[in-house]
Image (tube, rainbow, N blue to C red; front, top):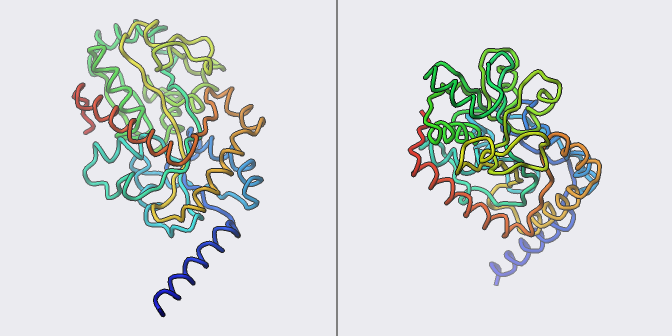
Length: 319
């Protein structure tokens, strides 16, 4: 009887906690340095999410190891709804597949809250590189094998997979130079330290629009309404290539279901904010909410199967 009373008391306490949540600011952990897409999206969402939750959002950048350090941090955080993470398929799916030293598992250690954005990557080059199209980039890479450097947001990141897949399908060999964030990788191309990047639209398009970088294509099969003026990969000359990047919110696995539901509802509300859409659209990304946390979890399982198949069938290496 004493055990039953104790359990009832614990359940009542959990229910009360969920009903009053949140009572203090929430930490939104970003696995990359400031300036990349995850950081841009997080900061753009902080105001509408603050209004929806009634508490402040603290954007906490923890860069390193392709966002794996941030994922490990959040996986071990208290499952109380006050530490959540924004992540893409790079951190939640690809890293655990290609890096056996990673100590977390997306399904075992996290609960999915909702998808928040979707966008194509953009292939961009330094203006000094004598190419103006994907066909010309392939020709240049074939003419100079191992001489072109491509910058990404980290080893095992989606931009890394996207470029490695491009190399495999185009029959070229470019040299991978990983950085700690998409922002830093784009800065390296701006500086001329590297020549090519497959980067997220929010981090690269402002520089394409000012002419500091030359955009060649988006990484989806067809053109994207999010990025005007650039062809899709099929039109650009590389058939059977189709890659896009999403970001979503995650919490530690044992986070109470009612708190996850509250975070889902607040995020869905925030994603409807016209000001947020106005910020994201010019950067080539769109707000996309899942129908439910369970729907997002099912989406993750399907995407994991598809990415594992791409890695297996193309023989992409991530050393």
